[in-house]
Image (tube, rainbow, N blue to C red; front, top):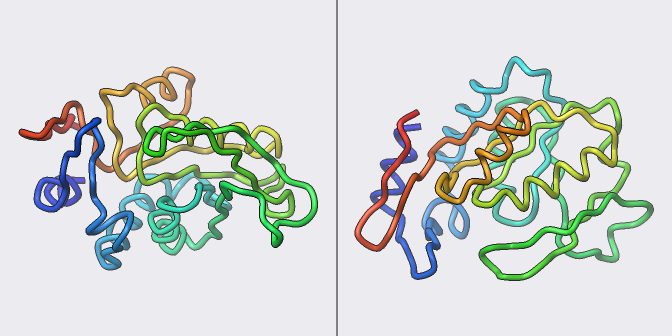
Length: 191
């Protein structure tokens, strides 16, 4: 998505440790109109897959997944990073390592929100090593649901998570794929 690449170049900042800060529009402050444009692109890519629900993980993936869910006309389920009092009953769970926060989380989803007949589209704001998406794939497998595809707003292609998922046979669509980045610039993959 050329518009996303341009927005990353204009508003994004590469921080030490290979962290891309896009808080001005994606994961701290939300550019709502632009988010809906990203949702339209996800709808264009996955609209013919029979998606019944979108699965994401809190917190930064929610806005992106919501925009896609609004365009596809399907509910969005998000995995919580911590069990809480309002998470009652049986749950699906998976352990996920967060590259950004440098720690493990147990993500959980109440069993009432994902069923075996669901056709899930798994989305997240970033795809780097693939840890969050792999955790959500594990939850989908526990539920017996079908995964129709995986997507990300931004994929750090040089970290290999997206390519590993593609080698496993998953359809992975990222709106922008970064092949390299440092403080002097960002190089996008030709799509």
